Image (cartoon, rainbow, N blue to C red; front, side, top):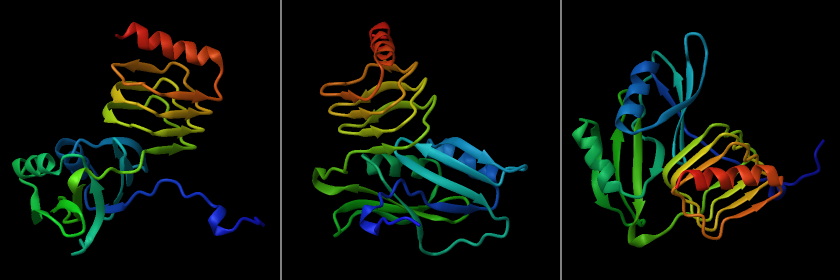
Length: 214
């Protein structure tokens, strides 16, 4: 039995689970409207998928008789809530609560997906910043980071083999015990980037990829 106390335990990522009545229709909605990409699926026929976009992650589970709740099932923070609201309106997405500045420091709105699941979307008012992204003990082989801001991000014990960083802000980011074999970096801000615990061969590959692509 472990002797660790709760204060010694580091929590990793947490992703909301969303029930849908039709996996394919849900994938089309979250992909075509919101830009999420499927990174994992399970079942035959498929009954569970993981969707990711930038730092956001959603888990969809097939429940054919699902009835949506009238409360929010997920909360997303974005860097331009007005733009995303416009995208949703243009796509005919049902808006549950209109876009407005809230007294708790967010500009936000609530929309419903095809199954009636309500998702709250917000942006900090007044330039408030989120904590830097943290990636710990994850397999991100072949991952694509494109048009993404990751200033101060930490990658700790992560497999980034064959990953692509394209037009990414990695200023002051830190890589520790990371597999960088075959990584390509294009048009990235790497000012103050620090890398620990890798072999020189992997580092050379990264540098060559960066130089070869601009």
